[in-house]
Image (tube, rainbow, N blue to C red; front, top):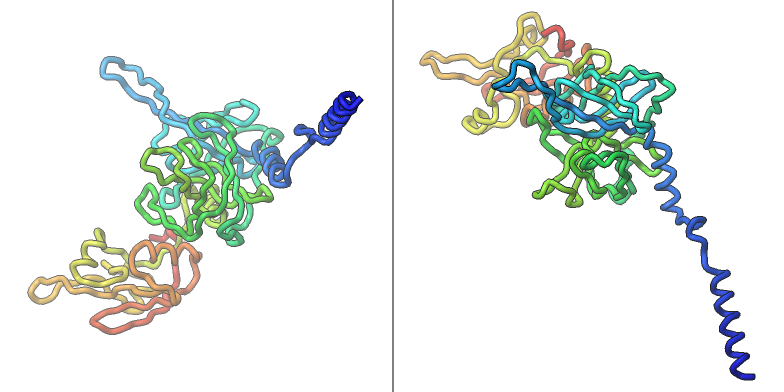
Amino acid sequence: MKTLFSLFAGLLLTATATAQAPDYSQFKTSDEENNIEIFKLVSPSVVNITNSRLVRSFYAFNPQEVPQGSGTGFIWDEEGYIVTNYHVVQQADRVTVTLQDGTSYAATAVGVDPDKDLAVLKIDAPNTELVAIMPGDSSLLEVGRKVIAIGNPFGLDTTMTVGIVSALGREIDSMSRRKIRDVIQTDAAINPGNSGGPLLNSLGQLVGVNTAIYSPSGASSGIGFAIPVNTVKRIVPDLIAYGRVQTPVMGIRQIPQADYYRRQWGIEGVIVLDVFPGTDPARVGMRGLSRGPRGRIQLGDVIVQIDGQPVRNEDDYADVLERHSAGDTVKVKTVRDNQIREYAIRLLSPSSR
């Protein structure tokens, strides 16, 4: 009797445990639900980009198309504009964009900005096939916030990785060797092929463009970088409309190899080589380099501040001007003959110089 009772009790406990076991197909944590929702929402906006070059063999007259690499991009709007990294399409003779459904289109580059490692492509696709990404606000990011990367690492299309914002305000070198500032650092796995893909927040909004990894091996090591979306939102309209960024100019020419001369002369700032006639710098008396009585080079104005922002080098100078438009007037502080001088300079459109 006792044995029968123990057997019955065991069967009852087993049945109860089985009844209480959760159904995995129906069970999701809130974070898993968020990840799945974002992937379904945004993956149709993510595209695969392949590029190739035409190479002429020594033994053949006809050029051969040689695959050069691949990367990721995303649909900016329903007119067919695609945003990616400049280095993904650099030196390409032919670029192909493949949508999530497998449809491929020939793409043309309408604008590039090597300084920020950004490029805009255009494809001729029906707008019904194009799902535009939703831009967010990268100024709202904080260290510790969840971010999601979607891309095509190692040619494996539409791959999602999850991480956090590891740091803000980083600097990395662009293809033109200019500093890209205010870069987002993330530990979301970013590998070759992820370049140009979107970095997303928990609402599925674009907060950055994945552009680089820090890794001795070339694979993800938990340190990836993304260009903030606020920079992208400022640059992309110019690339679409003009083919390049419309950063205003001041009307001066900067000295080449400036780092060398700054070290030689023990100074900081942008060294004015000369000023263009008819511009505000010429009218207000700003001076460039000159030669003294014995042929020695004499410094003219060295720009050390614009609108209260320190200017230590050409990167600082460009960053300040990028925040302005042609027609704006800026307050410029320079040093000349050991004296501080201040000027009000009206900025010009880049096409005027």
